[in-house]
Amino acid sequence: MVDRRSSGRRFEKPREATRLSLLGVLVCIAMIPFTVIAQRHRDTLGTVARAGVVRLPDSSTVVLASGARVRYDRDFASRRVLWLFGSARFDVVPGSPFVVWTETAVARTNRASFAVTAASQESTFVLVHTGTVQLRALNEDNDGAYRAVSIGAGSRALALRVVGARLIPP
Image (cartoon, rainbow, N blue to C red; front, side, top):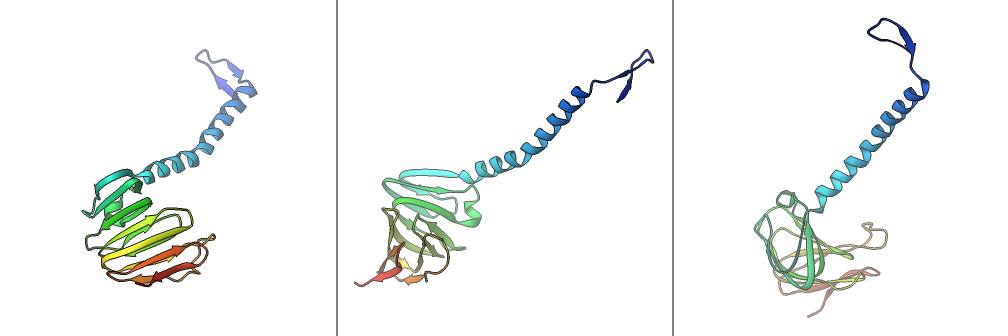
């Protein structure tokens, strides 16, 4: 590569400097996907709440038991999806589907008052006070092979990773 100085004389740039600058550009380009992934991960961490009463951005309330926690994204008001670890009671205001994920099940409702206990990595227990809740157990492959059960007011159900979701007789 030839470059000109103010004196008008020509000189050659060392090839090593050109290679290093090219390598630096390639490294910067290679880092772009990692920064995008890190930004997306940071955006999805959302809010984590611990024991006590939590008012969600859509005005629904959650009463978390001691040691329980709930996590939801910053866009909760539009998506209404959260993750529960432990036991909680939900009072869901009417609106789009409200989804509660645990390690072993997913519960969906549009409007209900219900309690969820996700005490282990193998089971989730749901008791519905008012409204209806759909409960589906998740298996190891997280596929849709397990059917969902509909739980009405005054009913309860159990979701087990190995057998699916079942209503519990009164």
